[in-house]
Length: 281
Image (tube, rainbow, N blue to C red):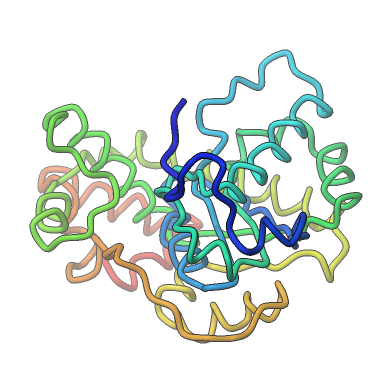
């Protein structure tokens, strides 16, 4: 693959000319459609942080051991130093101020497979862990289903993470199927994964090396939650913003579902552990 790094071959930045630079490192564990792109974008907009996105997206972990996996992880940090990221190439101006490197990994991209072995390797390297959790699994389902539907029906114009009003409107207006069996299968699977991941992280990561953030808190109190994360990482606290926009923000939850499914899903939720979600139904 060819990456644009912003400077000519053989040309060195002031930092490179001074010799190898040491970086603090972190990793974000999360689920798909849990607000992780929102978090990585915020982190990447701090001048001291280069935060990649889902950098191991295309890695096939079938049949590899934890040592081979860690080579992929450490190689990803090297790519971030060089300005390569799935977000977009990092400018050399930003890289000059960077002291911390991080990226996100979905649960099924290593954590649930290697568990203790992986976390022991991260600890050996002094890599801090951020665990992002989205509490409202119904809206997580809506995000998943709306993106899937738009990707199938609008492949050429599909934008999974919108930044413009037109892109937001296109995704927000999609009504998704709300068959209770289908929705509950998703909710229970995702809830189970969060519980499993939380138990693994709590058991095998020392408390000073782990920070948990809820997407709902991050969205509602961005400055306070990012300040807490910056203190955890050891970078100066400052306000950061992102160009990403919130898709599901102006409607009641039932409005995102197809009308024929709304009442059945509401009744099913009412009798379940997810009944609290009906507060904003």
